[in-house]
Image (cartoon, rainbow, N blue to C red; front, side):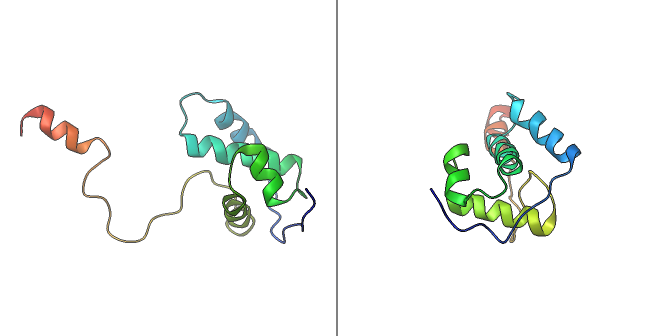
Length: 104
């Protein structure tokens, strides 16, 4: 699937690739972090691959590949989401169920 190469070419250090390899192999890591780690490893192996090719290899949409490729090229390597704008959540993900179990 030939396509244009991206103007965003992130460069990964050996330590970053080691971290990505570690996260990709974890069975208890968050699914999003594992996908991003697999994407980073695929991108390091095939830096000139198109977004569609990398997405098909990792199981992500080309727009998601573009987003992370651009983010890593401009802001450096990270497997976590950027901070969300707006008001923080009022409850933790398990907060509502915990409140009802305690009987409050």
